[in-house]
View 1 (cartoon, rainbow, N blue to C red):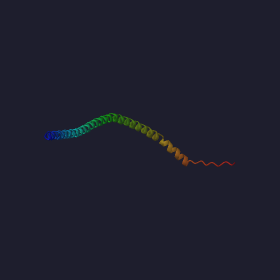
View 2 (cartoon, rainbow, N blue to C red):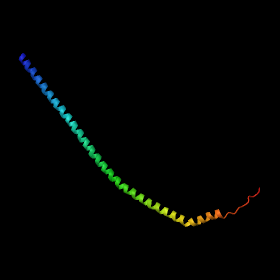
View 3 (cartoon, rainbow, N blue to C red):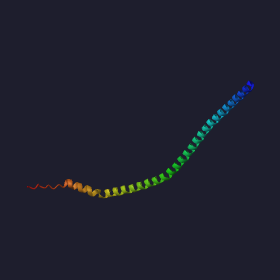
Amino acid sequence: MSAQNSAGIQTLLDAEREASKIVQKAREFRTKRVREARDEAKKEIADYKASKEEEFKKFEAEHSRGNQQAEEEASKEADKEIQIIKEAGSKGQAGVVKNLLSAVFDVQPVAPEKE
């Protein structure tokens, strides 16, 4: 009987070792799979980020053209207004100078009134 018990115990020990190996392989596989999943997720995130970045640049390029065009139009309008103001200033410049000179040189003193 003791030989049978020894054989049974040995069989159980062998089965336990085999189960331990299987568990160890499963852990290694799980760890490997977690790493692979993490790497795949990082790659997907990088691809998604790159596509969104490209989409944003395209959107920005389309809308910045409109801003440039509006700026150019505003600049042209401002230049026109400045030109009009300069022309008006140059037209009235002689009259203004004449009035200033006459006010300075043609003094007409007035005596103060008594109270």
